[in-house]
Image (cartoon, rainbow over the protein chains, first blue to last red):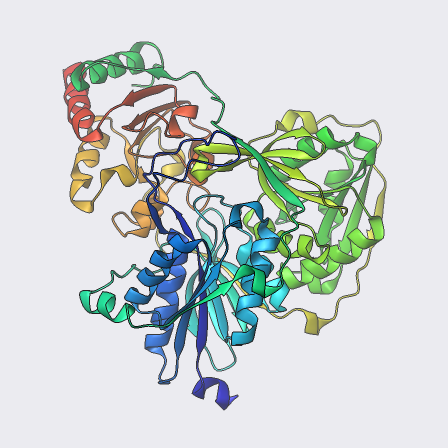
Length: 267
Length: 323
């Protein structure tokens, strides 16, 4: 399979834009989703690890024609996340313009991505194992099913072999396993497998000249007919009554030591 | 309402999370309507174990190609079984293995898997966490096909599933048609990271540190706290991902499960992946500047403040108490 080595490799990374981790979370008036107006946005962290792995694979590959393409679905604002990926080193972007992402279920979103990815004929599709907002953890697996490709999830490292890939998969409670799979394939990446790079000034400059193709979701011929819908969101109910120890740091600390000694008896 | 409950085993023994999934299944259907499914190359032992529980029957899905888990093998086998049984629900424990194949399996039926549910509102609405545990969401299933649901570890009470029956449930075999060529991945043996120098599992007191510590340079502060408490130092995943502490100090679903008398969480927001690792703790204390951090939902004591102000004061108070 010499040609596989020679034409290595076209990698597509599916990324999502999510509310920044420390953004204030306020439930919108209709209780269907959060108030998006004052949110800051960021690249979903597991997706950033998927992008990092794609860039590392491209750098390690001897072939000069390797390509990393990022695909992202969402409204206009996700353009900034695509630019961020380009600044880090992705070669071009594909923006699925879609204002109703939240009303589509996991299958609906994966169908959009599959329709955009299919014509590219990639060797490898990478994405994060889950998003930090909805946390469904399904997009990559459904995408593999729709594209008819083998997949592996919770991957920390990817190595190209003569016949395909060798990946390190995380299992529960500190266990791991290696999996061999043929290309093309879909992998969902776990965080922590490598160190995330920052965009350089040069990278940010270059990103401005890189191609971002915008496709309207409507043009992809995917109907938004969800079988699972998010009806309502709420603040979680407390499982325990937490005693909040108030006062200055010194007072709170003293109160805590006292409680741990006399009430909980764990000191 | 018929339920297929897909059990997961490890070394011939059914995992605890599977019985919690049974407790959830019993909320959806009467025990006699629940069929427990065991999958593998040889499923005699787990099938017998399942037959003694509150289920109507047990189905042994057996094939030599199912000896080791693969998404392709499990999807092919369960696809055929579900077509055969046409259940209203397919219920799983929410494990790494289920996450790996259940979304694809549901997709084969044009359905969407509802993963990691913490509660069942009614027969078609389920609660699951959103935004890293800061919110919950109610999801409604409206598909025509089976409803695929997985159950979060610890969300349903095990005792409910434990009601034993007078006679064991009947066991039947189901042999799927699987061709070796259908299985495209080759999984290797499970292995553990090389050296373990710390035993968090048996520690009596643990100080857990999270993203709130901001940088590796600030770690000596929590190390000093751990010393003052005679505690082991542990961390949430991001700290180990960044390489600030070794992976062997990671607590949570991908790291260690701990059960100390005291767990003091410093700058940890409390994503579910971390919380499942500390559930066995006798007393949980949280120090976090965000009053809405999910860690406060399970903490016995909380201090809502900047950890960089509270931790030094706490070290002083502990020293004073000892003196």
